Length: 459
Image (cartoon, rainbow, N blue to C red):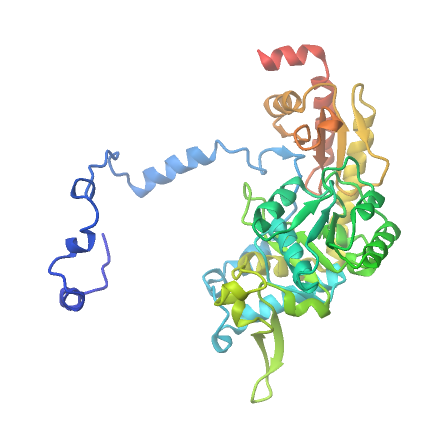
């Protein structure tokens, strides 16, 4: 059945206004032989039959409730308390979109304000917007902000090679045509001194990641020294980070970062086969006029009551796009709300516990894998929940064995982005991985190292 809101009289009236006699005249420019094509569609199905077929299709997915996963690389399996879905499933949040009318959007606006406040505390920054599309977009917006802050007089962006490779790709795609020069990620290794050597009078921003894409941590002193060196060159420093790690580690705002970005899906949002995600974007107060995205402020109305409104958002941001500092106007409001609900439910002690569990379980896994013949845990720096393992054979073969024989989703194959590492995988362990799963992983990796396994897999 179809619901058509207009009456026959209303349709005739509209057709008279635009000067047509029949609805078909609206499609006069479409060739007659393709206006109503014959569609070879299957017979209709009942709702019950459709649900059965969809369930069968869904069962083909390797979902994280049935499979143990050690795959991270930007998408992480963390526990989501039930309260999060309960909150975001409320109709006033789930269907709400625009907060531009504060008189009817106080709930949405307050939720965004609370999100901003908690993320500011978490990152050690002064201002947070609400929000960007994902972590990659946030990195690209950091580059645009830096260029705008420095009044377009500097247009070179220096990028660490250990920044997420997909973030670097999005950065280049996002800024093409903006006359920016992006360098640094062609370097091997992760030497901050090499990044500083690339900085000159045209450098607007240096972007690094901590923990970096390969899982390694840089100490607060290393980061402070980097920030001081970048600032001495007249540039800004952006740090991409992991919000869960900040439950345990010193926040970037405390060691001199000007802009902090992160992938926020780990805060109460599920992996969901790749999204939607949440771009966290935090920065210093003095740059607030150069920020894209929504900023929610707390105020007092004419009756003296507390209220929330969008603030410091220029009209050009939304309408006169050719004069805007950024052309991103939408956001991931529901995902930001989930992050706020997660942070409120977990509190600082709960978030620290998640970080500690991820840390200890990852280090237990690394210790066990390091004892296996043919495997080597790579890196001379501490790590958080991800680490690199050199393997005795191609990662694709090992991962196929893990999945088929043990129902384990293995690590990320680094051969394409970091070929100098050889056959290496990036393994991720979070609080969701039980010790039994880690032990099974170690056993399976040991078996996958045997020469006979390769024959069984490839045949």
